[in-house]
Image 1 (tube, rainbow, N blue to C red):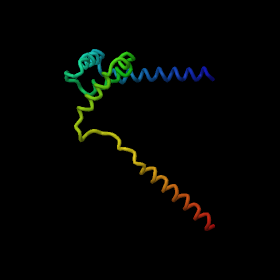
Image 2: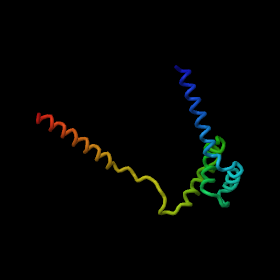
Image 3: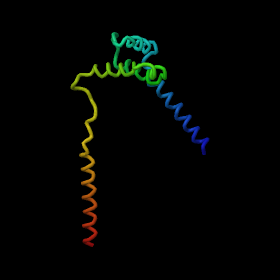
Image 4: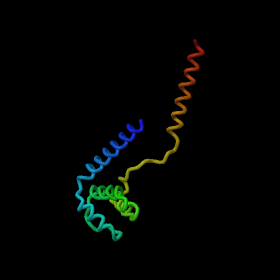
Length: 121
């Protein structure tokens, strides 16, 4: 049982690594290295596309030394967020609880309707 579990975990890890490599394959490693060298002084001076910056962020998040010893990924994410117009930023609204209240009210209505139908018979 444990052997099957470990084999499945190993296969899942290999599949995850394979898909990560394919997702990052559209931008060359030299471009990613150039972006990292560009952000090393704290400002991004080059003319990089959003796709190239996302690839550099993904590379830095998968690189243990880059993730622990620098905040280049955070700086690149901030730069990527600044490229968007203020009106076009997407995100989620704060949770207000209204959907939960609607679900509870609907459930109470169904339970009440069930009791009313049961008493009629």
